[in-house]
Length: 110
Length: 110
DNA sequence: ATATTTGTTCGTTATTTTACGAACAACGAA
DNA sequence: TTCGTTGTTCGTAAAATAACGAACAAATAT
Image 1 (tube, rainbow over the protein chains, first blue to last red):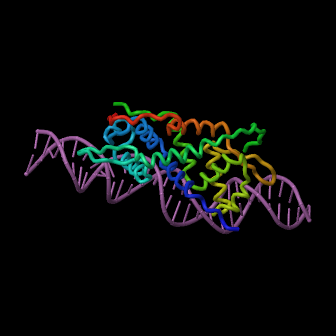
Image 2: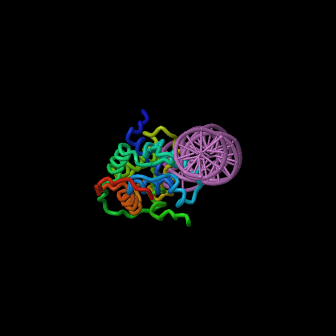
């Protein structure tokens, strides 16, 4: 029996989910989905981490393709990567919207 | 300046996202959102991992609250934890703005 | 030219994650 | 009872993650 190949979409969705899988990064993404851009320095004011740690988190979001930085010397302006953000939206919309209309069964949950 | 406390919702969303952040777990969740239940043994047939590794992934999904197991000796039937799955759906819908189409705003710092 | 501001990179450490095989426990079947 | 099936737990190992402070680079301000 051949082993199932996980689909490209599942890989992508997992990649995005992983990037969202930390409270700091979730916070940044939610902020950017509301206000379109922000500066790293402003974030450190509000977040309970030092700038080097924040920089790492922003790098992860960048590597996952969810955000992008633009130099606005001497600061860096971050905003969503609109194209990939849309892809993530589509993937999750599809993944999440499937509705389960079954009656709740009695389960011996473990 | 007091440091911002990340909201409870962001913590929860990040927790769910983290659980979804692996292709195997994404595959299992997508399967369960489509077919309501599955057996661990059937999964190992199709997935390129050994059963102990699969067991670990299922445990993570269980610990995150996204799935639950029901003993159906000698096997174990897994299904979504409907309550928490709904919570995750709601959190992500809100986060991803799946329902609302907002106009893109001008750039503002926080 | 020098100092300051801003954010990344480096070096380090502790923890978590991912994976495997072996061993084990629970249960039904022979 | 003994055997086979099923899935978890244990032991182990490699890799990734998360956090910090120090050092650095780039650009602006003095």
